[in-house]
Image (cartoon, rainbow, N blue to C red):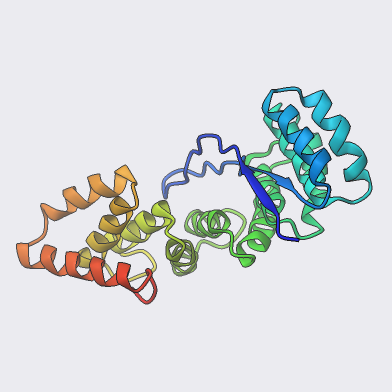
Length: 242
């Protein structure tokens, strides 16, 4: 049965190429086949009555319900009991829960609830990324760019950024622009850098707008026009083969 997600996204601090600041996917309380009790637990959670929510989720989680396991992990993460969060996320993650895998990866990168271990972070983030999680794909790109848990490899960083960019991740699009701007993992190319900054800007990322405009001061009108045309073509192709 397809999960219904209740979005309770907290503000996210996005990763940049300069600083590794992975953030938990705070996001989605899961609901599954136990619809009625899960709805009651969700209502209690949203009211901040974590004890009541836990009272409903715990028996389901003990029976192996992956959504209840994930939700308990999320609740403990929100209350900053990271060791318990890791414990319950791990139970959900081994059953293939994408968000739980992502969150464990983040906790390993941050050293919350576990000893900081970038190799473990890469392991769990890669599992989530291979399931198509754009946040995980982007963050693996950052780890490759920084050389955390893997050998620094800008080409690999660009590869993972592209996977996230195709899913319209604005920061990933911006990061590809940075790589073209600096000539890291790709041939230095101001036109393509402008194109990706522009796409990031159109996706709502303020740094994309700022750096696009700064870069434009170093470009000719003809180069800017070409970059703008390329951005339109890229968007029309759903950001593939750009």
